[in-house]
Length: 300
Image (cartoon, helix red, strand yellow):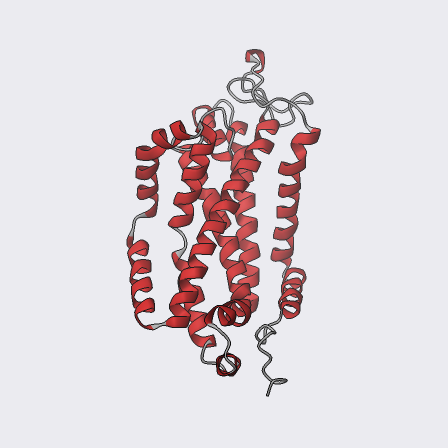
């Protein structure tokens, strides 16, 4: 019996099988493969691009206001004559950092709540799912706008304008987007806890923490990866929306949404000011979503 149901090993979906499935999904799905390549290029560009392209993002030149692309400024300049490429690369770091950090918050909270509700059931399930339903009923964007408007000044005074907005935006996006992850994890753990390998682990005296971490969560890892990809795209869109509405990062912090907000007054005279940051948001979010859809379709 010990050989058939070893408590020390993960559940039937091993790490090696998960890795193999993920690689198979990536290379057999053309859109997922292209999305992965696009994301790698974007990440490499925003991480290493500013190292090689050293044009200052705050260098003002009124003689080059809203200039078209040239050898000196490959993506043109903005209304203050600042280089758009330099600001796009630095802004990408901030936008991706917000997306990844908010994703980590939402996934951690959603996975924890879903695992507890699904495994223990009973009153734990009832209470946690009613809280989930309550958060699902909240109008997210108006609530985010209201909270940012009310707490922006106190938070930025306590830290700094950049750090304060980053913390506030990440926490808001993460705390308002964990519900779908919780429901997804709960539903799958409800199914998995009735399977023989879980019952065998319980019969051999394995604790709840051991069963959840070593047996149940490895079996929902693929679903969590899908949820993570969608959460990153949603966080980038939300941050861009806040910045576009003037409630995001300060004007001197060039996120992609902030660049769009600046460009809105120059759509007729200098449309390229909006096209390049808009394309960056569009390609990033589309690639993330296609990658997540490719994984989800293959595993459904």
